[in-house]
Image 1: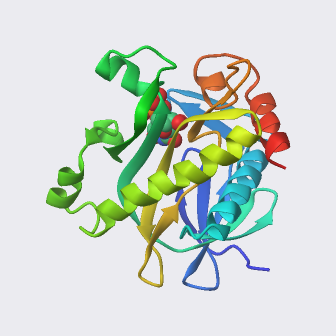
Image 2: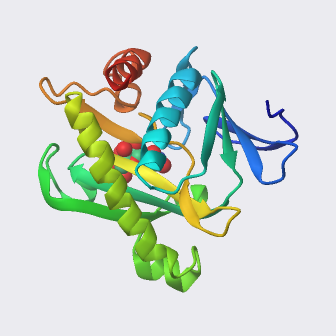
Length: 235
Ligand code: UDP
């Protein structure tokens, strides 16, 4: 069993530890939830374990369908073993249905399906509040290798197909989600970070009930109840 080494980094929802293998890291999922650049936050016992479990499950499904990711295995309730990656400071968002930040930006109503899935890039930079950028910005600023830009877009759309279908079978609409990418130890580009209801919008297909972090952002109900429902339907 891999053992925790030095703490490399602590973020709002996760801690990253080194291991005895320089190519492998441990992601520890914390029992905290935060929103609006960390202005709103809370501690919720059991949240880290839910995110780790859901994320591990989704990574396993993606890997089995040929999507390259940093995932190696779930090693405990709150911990996942991953390949060490050189992360690109870019967030890739795929939207199927309008919700969240795009509503104000483009004057849209919530809940409208786009004619085709929309891929957006954001510059991951706290000081600048993660501004929207386009592929050309990534290339001009060197935020990721040039060949990685089309690859991130294609992979994000492939992940959308796989997860969209998976959730649809469980009566859940995949509204949107965010992915991060990085260079893995073997030199390839893969999906890193987590894929959980913290980074997706998931609505009950029948009732429209929100089962994701918007419950916390907008006080719509018990966050963990939503996450537990997602896990129950996936397992
Ligand atoms: N998202 C995320 N981390 C971020 C920003 C967005 O995981 O830093 C996810 C968010 O949960 C949603 C999708 O990306 O599923 C699109 O988010 P949006 O741009 O609408 O921003 P938000 O409404 O979260 O501010």
